[in-house]
Image: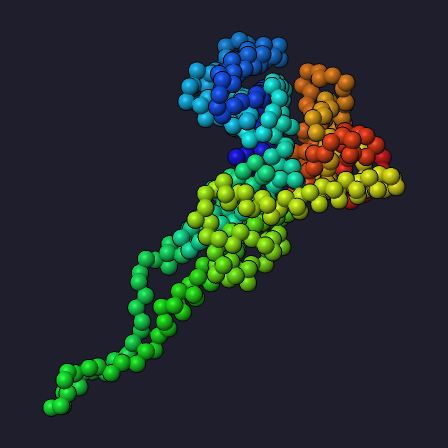
Length: 391
């Protein structure tokens, strides 16, 4: 599943020519055969646009070579989800199998086009799951579509790895064996226990282990405000909650050993806990923006240029975008000037795409409601983190 790090990698890339390809796919049935045909057509369209943008034919061929290699890859097409996204540029290639439906689309420009990916990252679906046992620790980023394990989170591996595989031996102090009396059956040393029990040491080690897990998770998630669901057996869950100071940790968790269920079931149980929170947050955001815009509150705006500028500088707290809408134009970050066009022109980008990604990457929240729910029937609305300076 796509992660926020994947999104950041696409947005921070600065290719001379960026190709973004989206197409619907299928996991089974006759429709699977349509995938290679669709990709072949999309690659031909992308090549035509690259040549129009100034690349020579051999250069365009080189950029698109990784995509062409997938067309006849039978194994690749046998393992698909609902959609496929490919991102190509000189010496750059990424593809992502998507759990969401996407339109058939080719975009060639100076930036990668990621708007179709946004439902994966929208606030009505993004959360974290921490699965903890003594044997292993996993941190997942989740959406309503599935879970993706965060491989770069610096988490303690396991209790055993932290303290070694040694068995516990009670510490004792024993007197020397005394000379047996005539009536004695055998000499028995007198021993006094000066150490803790195996159970006591195990608990001490577990608490230290969970303390390190809690600190590592807080470091990994930093200022992220997406909710965190804990999946653990009752003993570990109770101890972890005593040790964790995380403000995003939900009060209710998945109280079962996470190793006893598969990832799909873990996702189902975790999403059932966060889904009501998402629904409430979306409705509250819509109501708040309706009220602020109706009262001409300067902390709110429905103007696309103002939203784009605010997103660029991390000033958007909450962004509402009408699902499926696009606004084409250009944003000169140096001069801070924006041009909006009725139809896409050379080097245009989707300004809503730009605003959404910069809002997400700088800690803001994005919702994708139907257009009818937006203030003034616009295509976008935002709550700003502070009042914009007057022009």
